[in-house]
Image (cartoon, rainbow, N blue to C red; front, side, top):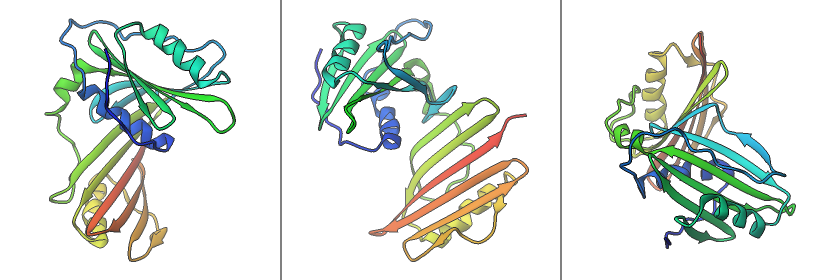
Length: 235
């Protein structure tokens, strides 16, 4: 099984978002099954990203793996772990492995680091839930005409975080006004003046009894990009 898709290299946080594209590439119609376990290199440091993560409504298990071994050795390890039915693509210096396994879709992005170590970003997505995620309600009012690029939710102990990334054609102030109204409905209000305020960028913090939020707005070439991060404490 081979693949010819190509992705640009991106910083670590953006590579997490890029993983949301892979569950849509290969889906399985097999019966429900337990989450598969992915064996990482023995000498690696494992950094789970959230206890419970949903990316665009899809339940995922994501981990960052750092190994002192060369990239070729780490690549060989995951190829052996995943077996024969795995797609392998190159993107710059990175290798991307992808595999459909039962109700799940597994991806591993392996990248050499400047210090000689190797980073592997692993993701296991629930394909069955992905087929049901398209009709889920967003539960948040966005400015009219907005396109939602990503919706990532994570649970870490008592804390729940959610990040929405969207674009639209509205001005910065209109976005601020409408998104502030949506946050006010959740009990979150501006925490002082904007942290940054210019013709092409605006950053506003919010707070309240239910938690806190930060809104980053950037405008260029007639388009506004909005990144809204919400943090709340579970009861």
